[in-house]
Length: 73
Image (cartoon, rainbow, N blue to C red; front, side, top):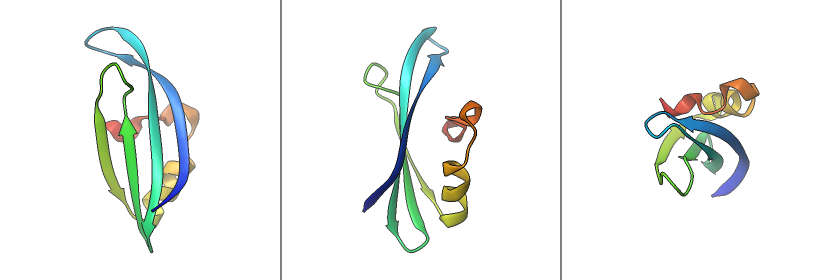
């Protein structure tokens, strides 16, 4: 497993109306296999794992700043 990219960005927790900091980390697992780990921060403690292929990983890397966190839905 190899870390490819990571990013941190602010978000607004809709239920508590508090600001937090999310972190996304993209790992390469093997040929055409990537794992995206998304976490909403220590306070909320929500984590998600999303499997991506090469195309989806490349799209994630090239997302605009305004689109960060869009994979959470």
